[in-house]
Image 1 (cartoon, one colour):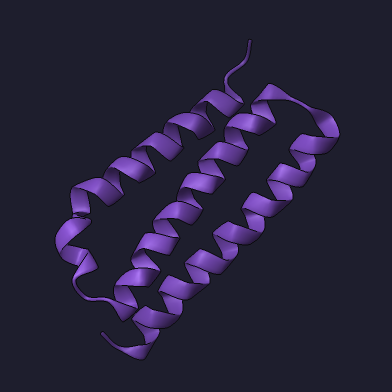
Image 2: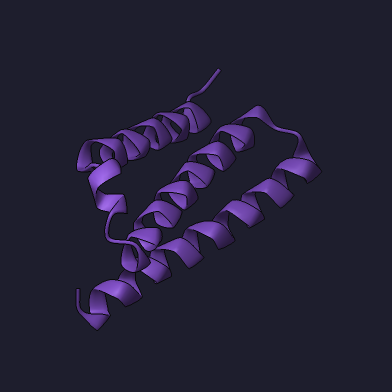
Length: 88
């Protein structure tokens, strides 16, 4: 694993955490259900970033967390983003 890959993994984790915090602050202020769905989507991206970043330090994590699990997390977060923009 090279330095650029490590930088990208931790940057993804940092940005998704920052966006999750901002969206939860917005959710507290507005109490909108659409923002709640977006917040959950960003939180799932943060979860994926945590899992991928742990893989930098512990190589055995990749045996338990497969690509299918990470793709599943991304898919579920995209469903929540879709629900956040769906007109009701």
